[in-house]
Length: 112
Image 1 (tube, rainbow, N blue to C red):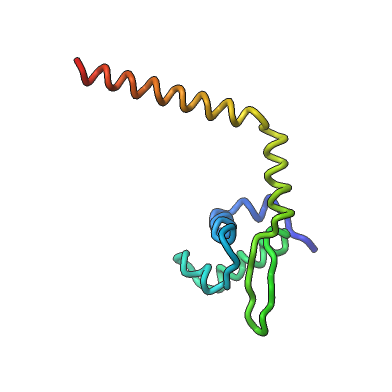
Image 2: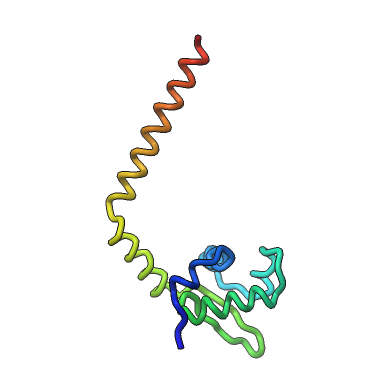
């Protein structure tokens, strides 16, 4: 039975694992080095991500290697693009414009 994609993404460490795997395939022990937790905890998070079809598992003898499942991660991106679309670009522009105005005000205060 497949796990919930959104429940899998709800936990910080699982999102961090996805970011690590974005770069390249990794063994659980390599992933665990990036966390202050046990290998068992990392393995649990890997299982949840795999059940949600966010990552793929490749077996090499007794070892397992994990990688991102690009199909599922693109579905997430597409969802947010549909939900927010150009609004994210609008928000980015607004934040950058506001930030620039605040910097200008600070410079003016320093001059006085």
